[in-house]
Length: 177
Length: 109
Image 1 (cartoon, rainbow over the protein chains, first blue to last red):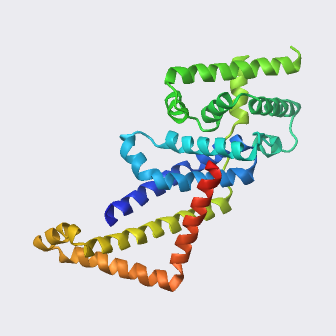
Image 2 (cartoon, one colour):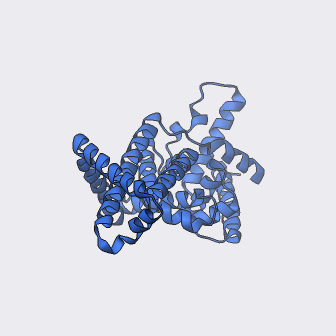
């Protein structure tokens, strides 16, 4: 690779980094459940991405690289749990909506519901939990999620539907409905 | 209830801003990495020019009157070399590689 190509590549990578740092961090945070490990995971994701960026860019055919970036974070997170025998667990106190001080009774009730939902999400099987994080925290559409998870769009649609259904059932069960 | 669950999911899974310290650290780390890669590339270009098998490119450059292009690579390589000696970048480059290798090993192991 010539120096000029390298400079262009670095500019492109900087753009990718600026556009998606928040996405990668959000994914990492909801995946590992605490800021400390989320920082590590985000850092490793971008270092890994930089190493393979040239090839990814060449093979992307102009498609957005966000799913590729999230896939790297997804693989690193899987290894993270395998190595340390940890289970993901969202620290609910850190979720922004739960940090709001006092409010009306309605707000307090909603906060309780949000807390239940977060707990419910953390108990879902890995693939369902991840699909929900990508859909709701990152705003990814089915096509992007499918690319990040290495599935078809149809399978992804079904996965998200089942994840929401299971979460709903679990919540109803816990409320004794 | 699905709509309500989706609404709650939207409220629960909000995007999370990375801490500023992480952004600073990451930007620094990536700059060091890209600089180290650029240094490596400049060194490689320089050594490739010494190898007669790679003379095709510089010779073609001379033919089209672009001697300066090769000179630029040399100057850049020398500047990088100087900078590396002056700032201990070589050690840094090595340590970044070491960290990257270590991370890779840990993740695979």
